[in-house]
Image (cartoon, rainbow, N blue to C red; front, side, top):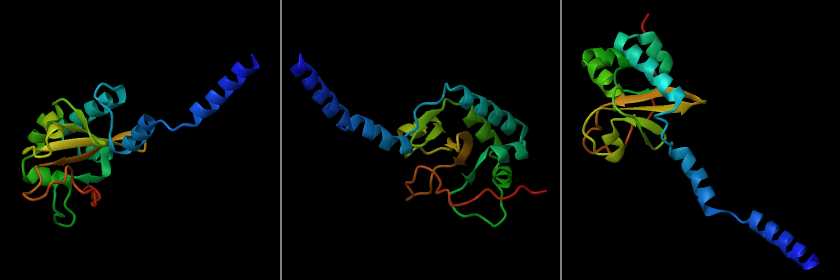
Length: 166
């Protein structure tokens, strides 16, 4: 009886102290890979508000929903330009509204549309992404395909969203 108890105790100590490779890989992936949040209630609520703000072209609401490093173009762009002025000038509001109605899917640390973009980094059209920032969803980027020779999947994020014009 004593021998069984001793063997069981030793087995418990040994097995609980062993690292499990699967758990470690999930922790490492967690920073870079977002699980599918498309059916999550908070994601759907944020997406509904985002769609409505785009439909109404409510710039103040959109600005509050954007990540601080929101990406809307691949180059630096002129000083003081806002994403909204860029979208107005290039007539992109309709493109954005249509894109937001598509099915969202995870890609790296983002939920993205269209799903074809998540399947191929060479997707030639516009793409948009949302990510979690401090526990809240934020609209992270809406850009065209990268210029020829640039293979990064989303804008660099080095820019900050300029203040809205008064």
